[in-house]
Image (tube, rainbow, N blue to C red; front, side, top):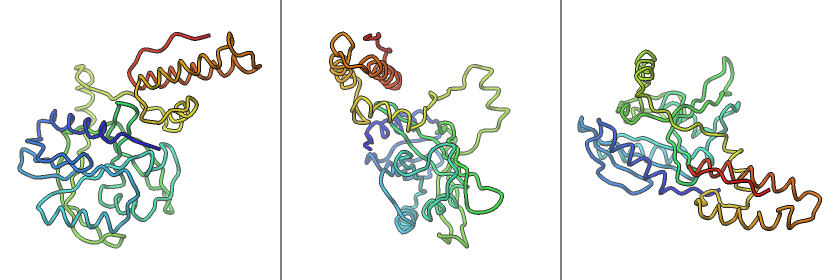
Length: 260
């Protein structure tokens, strides 16, 4: 799997600049973004796209704290986190983040030029260590705030400076929805579904719209029943059309006309 971290970074920067509580972006290192709030607090935001462990998490927390900063991790969900709706037994490093952020891990996802930042909830079952995984809605940068958490008896013990997001009270959300000011991110299909469409067309997961169109035209010429007399040509062309339409919808492009 591949991801275009540049699009995720661009989305993050745009969201930060639009948040009234953000005074400035002090540094943009693509996978590490340093932000200063209007309160004067500084947050180091880390976009994680590869495997991590407890030692890494602790080292980042300690280094940021030594510089007077709070830490916020966003993890690439497709590579590092379980699927929405999955019953899952978290790794030790996941448990560390769950202890820090209150049974959730903040995540990012990217398809083409679209990016999302959202919480992934790991809801504890009544007994045992298993968790029910639930993907939340996009985070609201206006709800970003800093706090000190104390963890003990787990994989990471001590006091830690973290940044997290406040949950918006339900009555306030309902008022904003009625007033027509509530913005909702596009619905995300499951990763398995969208990646299957890319795989069917033989595309990289970060392919842009022009690349998708070019490959679609090539496959249409190869498998269209007018040119291909194989018994399954019609069925394959239908699958290609469906995959192309789904991908172009994700990329914000008009759906194609059928090639049948």
